[in-house]
Figure 1 (tube, rainbow, N blue to C red):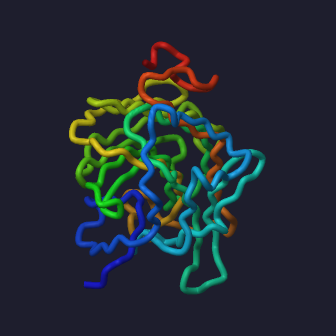
Figure 2 (tube, rainbow, N blue to C red):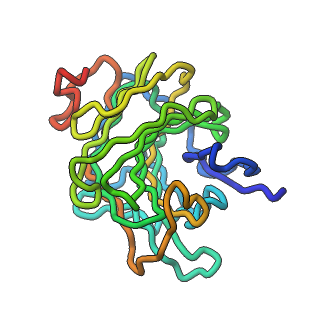
Length: 266
């Protein structure tokens, strides 16, 4: 079997059965976040001490683009992750991903972003730890499959097993307006929120390791049952992230937009 080189990212074992994985790329130093590390990033610039840019590889045959620093931009105080065609026939599309240098265990994870509208594309805000870090595969997902920007999906992986999936309809399509997506992860559960409303809840039993925060925007030619068929729109597709934040356990209302400023979310 030919093995595929991967980086630390969201894998879907149930959909990728039989893939031989050699995880070697995209490894940053294993910094651990503490209670003093709560942060709010409004992307006036890309802070390379906080963010590692994925560049020069793909997650495997399921992904139809290559991570590239050319697909990452700061524009109008937004982090812009693009999916676009390239001039390289061996790598016909490039796409964007960033991941935190540090890892975070428990707390409140929040981001405000807007997606594009195209079949076969995933716009994701998630946390992940896995084999590349010499840890079991744990993950907490917020994903907009942009063939249907009126819907958002939620999921966890615990020790490599996909569990606790769910979805919610958005009050307005994700490509029309920015939405505030959040999840609170504690010792026993994960609770997901959209625009301040609780929309899904799941057990966190067995999820013990700190995880890195990711944004990714990618396409597929193989996971079509899940993500739809990708048809090149002949233009760059973009995911715009207005801001992202993490608030340590026990802290509240660190910035005006936080769901923790609403006591009903605690």
